[in-house]
Image 1 (spheres, rainbow over the protein chains, first blue to last red):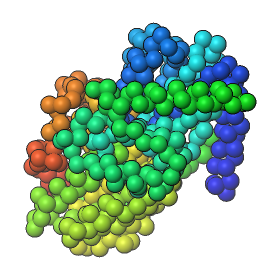
Image 2 (image 1 turned 120 degrees about the vertical axis):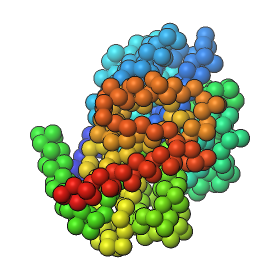
Image 3 (image 1 turned 90 degrees about the vertical axis):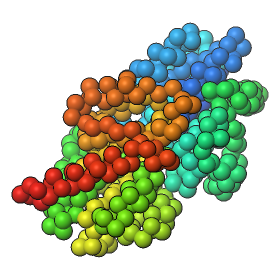
Image 4 (image 1 turned 180 degrees about the horizontal axis):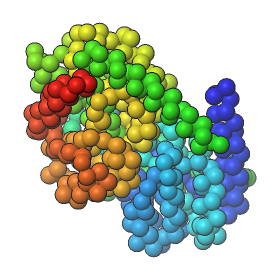
Length: 223
Length: 223
């Protein structure tokens, strides 16, 4: 009975997500869903991406948090359109929240939409938003056992960014074991090592992003 | 309608939690619910606590994870009774899971039960387990803005441990601002700085724990 209810919720969410995807596609907007534990570096990655693509790609940002508008304020200072979603108590964004946010986003003026999900490695994995790519940010201080503990998140993602590599000298983090564990869950996933603090690997991440955008623009269905 | 269903779930959970609390009390077991983001150091704190209290206090551990038994295996090596709960997909432990786990725990042989919740700063805050104290582990790499983003968790906790202070020289973490933000949410909360890596502050944490235990043993109702 409960499972049935859950299926209905997810089915309804999927339908709204598909409508979001069509709306984004018809406006030539490529959307990325950024997911991670609290404090792994989603906002830092958004700021680093905006700086790297300034004058090249028009970016919009949707910030998702249970509470506060701290991230939206920080991102807004970079001069990009930003919408903050406060979920109240909900542990993830859903397609309906994104649908409402898209109504407040100047879609004709942006090419890339970065959606920062609520900091949580569990619930966001089950809710499509209408995004074109799903990105996980892991971070070195979290430890290398996360793929075993949160397998669904790694199963559904397109790319994993291992952030805070500048802290590697002070921590035990086995990048090889971490990568192998992820590849066993999801053989197609791509993995990059980055540091938003030093800039290491950001160019590689941005290149991947631009390639994904151009690849999808080249298909018949825009994204 | 949905809110009503949620209330019923929480009401039923509260009843089972109260039964757990009575069962623990009748066995003179003091229980602590440890909550944090993924990778903030719950398991490391449990290991450090076991080592510090070896031969003094009899400890049992319940490990909660979406998937895997890595933590239970690690804790089991310390020679304490441990039960692993795999939630499947659920983003938090609940009182019924703990009720089942208690049936597999030698309650007459332990005095302190450490319950490691699922790594998540949102959902676990809403589900009482029958614990006597709620503990949040924050960590320096997560950043000092977490009280603003996950206020409920800080509202319901008795103590916050700021872990990974050994990484402070490499990160911007304003301990004073973090503590003030927490105190505004919850004036009674206690805050300790610790490092499970170096042992800093562990004695202070263990002293707090023992004081709580003895204080509650001294009351008419055992805990």
